[in-house]
Image (cartoon, rainbow, N blue to C red):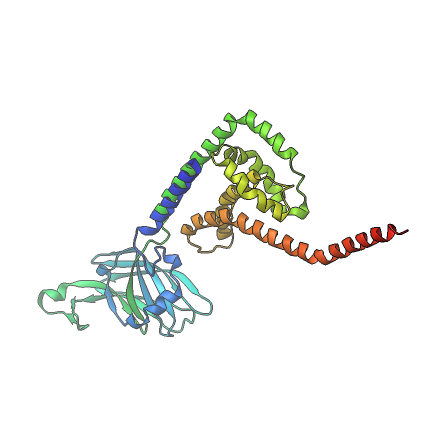
Length: 358
């Protein structure tokens, strides 16, 4: 019951991670936004002059370069005053080889003359796609500036497109650092709580475990490499740490009755008991999510974290799939050997029949 409670709490933790927060194309992380998302918005691209005062950190813009390449841009930081404007962004342009960079724009007012700063957003380097500029006057909807009267003293900084097109896609968090930190702390506490309960259960029943261990192992043979490396090297672990948990379950007899026949059919009842098999299922619940996270880090993949509970569920189901496939394979082997066995029986009966007349 404790394991069920912990698993439900674990699922709730990852579900809450996936439900809250801003998202673009269902993604809350800027790094997970893919090119397919940009293609869905291709009709919204247009040349623009975006006031810096209308931009906020955490916002994402989609763009199309002058070469027709699609990309995304994340706003890190910006600042502006009467003498200086600055903007720091990350951008990634999708091409045969993706072009990903960080860029900083900074312009200032020197003796009444404003500088400007432009960059290209693709790897071709033949032009400039966006520029940070300063303009006097009040910007109007028709694209002109009203420089009459009091408006002539107004000064604003703008992000201007040069041959490229851009539009505002939404707001996300770049790496979800705060949420990931809270998630990690909560996971560590949850894992610690689970380890404490399992360890307490093991040490409380240490003497009983030793009796049960000796009795169970006396009924099984030694597992070799031919029986499977995973089974060979995982059996000592789940027999030592998970069998006591299963032996303490109220439905222990149901577990034994459920798996005894399938283990015999698969031909491994001499190697593991039904209790061992159910412990192997619990062991897979732990190892599948761990392997998922390890390969995610090693391959630097952007696999979503909310699939971790699904990996645990697959881990629980996998041993059933494995044992059923092994049972089917053994049935086929027996069927293929039947003609030979029948021939041997017929030969044996024929030989004895002949001997009766000698």
